[in-house]
Amino acid sequence: MRAGETVTRSPKEHAEYHRLDALGGVDMLQARYYRQRFARHVHDTFCIGVIDQGAQRFYRSGAEHVAPRGDIIIVNADDVHTGSSALEHGWAYRAIYPHPDLLNTILRELPEGKGFVPWFPDAVIHDPGLSEQLLLTFSMLAKEGNNLLKETLLLSSLTLLSVRYSRTRRPPQRLPAATERILRVKDFIESCPEADHTLTRLAELAGLSHWHFLRQFKAVTGLTPHAYLVQARLRKAKELLRQGFTILDTSMICGFTDQSHFHRHFKNSLGLTPGEFIKG
Image (tube, rainbow, N blue to C red; front, side):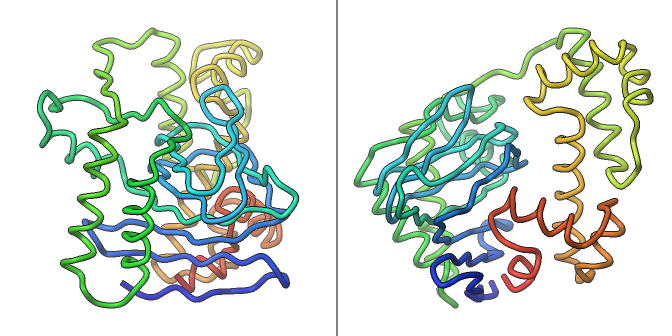
């Protein structure tokens, strides 16, 4: 693990990012925000966090939620969500972003868990004991050394969270034809997010009219095709930055208009700048 470096972007706001080696790799973010407003976006990982100070307001699963100090926030992988302060004095939180494969592995170890998709129905959880355990885990993960203890704490916390609050959903045996068409378009976008895709080309791939394609795509993904394309570009950008590509090269390779355009989308979705991400 490499320790993150705090980068101050204003007298009050800061974000500290860590890329952890624990249990195959987990991202962690510790942040203090006042004016930050996360645009609608998705992660291909879960987000599991605890509010340290203030309160966060966010959209998830079709509704607005408020998480006060000490509460746990959870966003499922691929859940469309936002984020902003619920109070004038902002909010601070710590969060980890485990991949679904990790939680799926944990669930397979539990009774009746094999073959199910992990899912948390509650966006906000009030559980002081578990919150304290998560905060202890986050504190240990941010330090150097003690890898065995870190992985033990992380596995214990995720297992306890899953046992108490996760539900299981069987993958559908057969998807509706319209959904399969949209998923085919999603896969196409993910395969070449840097391309200058057109509505006509994507609608043709789905076998739908322009209007029906836009409607079906948002119904399935929760995002417009353009918003989804931006998220796909950001996912590719994160991988390139981790591989050592420069911010300028990454923005060009991933299809962003310019570096400032890339910077704005990155911060609006991830809560930190590309430079802060690299330093993690």
